[in-house]
Length: 384
Figure (cartoon, rainbow, N blue to C red):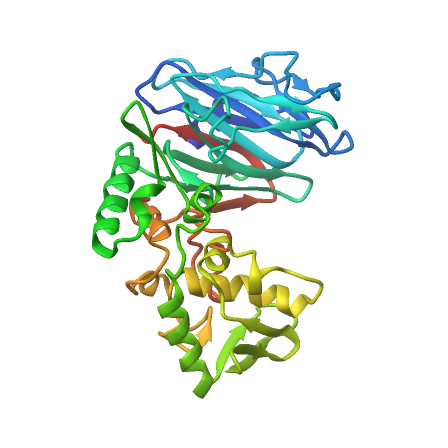
């Protein structure tokens, strides 16, 4: 589909990129929104307006929660329809989709865009079915991925065709994918008695989205207390008596260490205390809080990924000692990530913050696409 569209679309204006938005849902009320920072205008927050080409750079409002001055909802029309838009060079970009109702974006002084939230119960969008893909389009490349780091809901697929006509794609979930996620989370809760079913957010009795384990902590700080403790204790016990090797895949190379006095010490990366459930699911607190030490900052993603994938009892080298077929096999693991990956058509999707950690020469599992000569970026919503 992407290559066919490339043949019929006119070339985008200089410095801009053609984007095709496809309605592959069963709804005629599907809306897209494009946000990000304008790289050619001092990194100002911008929207693409409803016409799919005009840029709206809002001014700073006098107070919080101000309404937008223009319509930024791009209607995708009937099922099967494609809407073609163009975007400028954007950093921190998101393409949002909502089904059956439009989204509400607001402004705070700055200006700063108030984006939809899945953890704020008073957010005007909390009972709307929506999702997003992430991208950056700069002078070097277009880089994009489907993100499930915060939650999973409406299926999205993405593809990227370059100027040579080559296409790479991440198909995402089938239309039935979200229902499978819901059923599997409920089943996992019955298996281990943990609150996997509490990740499911329902409206009017119908499941609307499934939050990540980290986002469940926003409303229930003790939800995962002690969950990872038995596994962490096994890992710490193991590497008290034998070496662990973390390949930083950076200048620090391989770092070899052991656990002593409750601390995992890895030469120039320093010491790591035993992580809690919050630390593991967030990948950013406790021992996984990044700092100024480059070696430590390279270890953190690889160690956090090995915990979320529960591979630390399977090898002594990480990430190079294991492959995706071995991820999530322990009874104590990130079952949200396991389920999200299992339901993707090709197994790829960004399910926790360091899901892009890959063994040397290994295949991407995070569902990223990128190219230095992009011609057409295609996103589909609905999974049909």
